[in-house]
Image 1: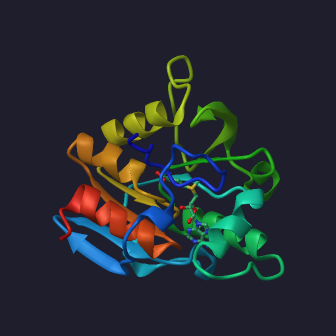
Image 2 (image 1 turned 120 degrees about the vertical axis):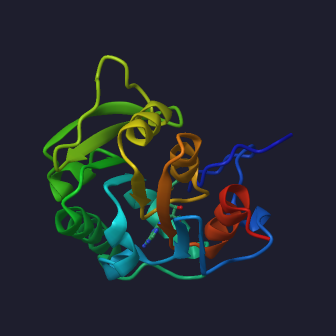
Length: 199
Ligand SMILES: C[S@@+](CC[C@H](N)C(=O)[O-])C[C@H]1O[C@@H](n2cnc3c(N)ncnc32)[C@H](O)[C@@H]1O
């Protein structure tokens, strides 16, 4: 059976995990798109600066430990809070519209301009909006509809917790560009092969 492609911390038999991916990749750039391994807790990165929108399905607190263990690390004290601080820092520094999904717990930390519930891979989460980001609420119910809306309205999107790259795919489908980064180099390898013709 073909596995579904999105990086989740939850155990699901029919979903791709980094262990299924043959190798890791640190950096690849092609045709105006960039994919690279980057730990967002380090904050802003030069390569983020060319985008006109941010979309990201950020890690939940409970999943953060799993994602760290998948790269052979243990979370340090308050590291999840540092991750959220970096999400906010990049949104504030880039000053572009940002669409961020996550559990209700992120609302207090990120203090979005607006938020409302949507479905992410079947689970109810909050969509947080920043810097003038808007969505037609009557027709946006899930992450695919949000990604498609973002890809229609912007030219180059950043996803700083990109997993296997569904946001990059959504941008590409509309002929747009992306900058995608993730803690896990296996996600970057998968994305580069899938979307960027990396050999
Ligand atoms: C919910 S998943 C994103 C799934 C993604 N939208 C996809 O299409 O596969 C959250 C992602 O956050 C990444 N992540 C966790 N901690 C991170 C960190 N410190 N820096 C960057 N990415 C991180 C995980 O590796 C994981 O890929």
